[in-house]
Image 1 (tube, rainbow, N blue to C red):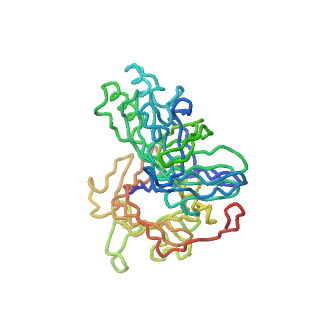
Image 2: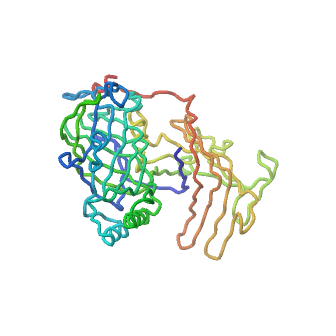
Image 3: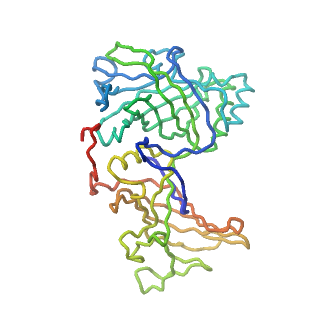
Length: 423
């Protein structure tokens, strides 16, 4: 179960979602990057295929891609080596010209390796249930399909360094003419180099040092390679070009302005109202919640804040919204009652002449889509800080598991007829 962290600050980003028949994309951040390449002629690239059930996979034929000249999408996917069982084959290798990996580059050089010896392999993945509107989408001229449960490994000179897991990846194509483009979700890396040589272990640790706790995602284009068949499979190999590994974390920015009936309120209570007696320390109020709490702001749209454009790593969320006629701003946050708890100096709060911090506890959060609750989370501790050098308050919450509470929400909304999707 993915955990998320809520950051209570207003963020503004300039990414524009799907205007003028542009593809639905998540935002990108400049940062550490590594380019990669995988050519079928060199035993690399991806493989896609149908299965008739007589081989190792269950029978599977993907949906028809709704566009002129297209047929059914392949149900299964993996890297070249999965089909050939050749340990020297892979999906792709890293290329020179990376940015933002100083320790990794130095460790490669110190151990006598070159970057092209780093290779990545994909395990079996598929379109799973393959349901329109859940697993694949056609929006304007663009067709999107999710492939799920992709385990991968990263090797150096044939020795293991890392394993990882993309819970889904998305491929899309302009049905009027373009290559398929592959975008993965984010994945942390697990160091599996303990039985590899000392040099490989040193390089693996250097790579993790450069990641500094962040995750990776990959993007690339596929071009046709060659067909294959046998073992119950009918499919093709594809070249990987314009590949980029990026570093970061899945994030969605949001903001909440009081003028828009958004934001949060703080107060002390004398015990005669719905809350027990509570007086905060200094200028800090003991209780807090978003403006919708107990009709502090009676406006029907009152909340903590709404999501805005500029997300990273939420491709499927953006597609689900766009397909159903929603906008990212239709996702809104609400925060239930929270308090300073014991409110003990040195344990729950502290301050100096130039800075201060204060904890609030047991914050219930709800995410609504167009006013309907869909997700629930509980943040154990939220720390609000102030520094004169920064000049404003900022707040960080502990990570929380996210629970689906959408069972009573609407199924669809604003689905307009689309000649390519067959709706």
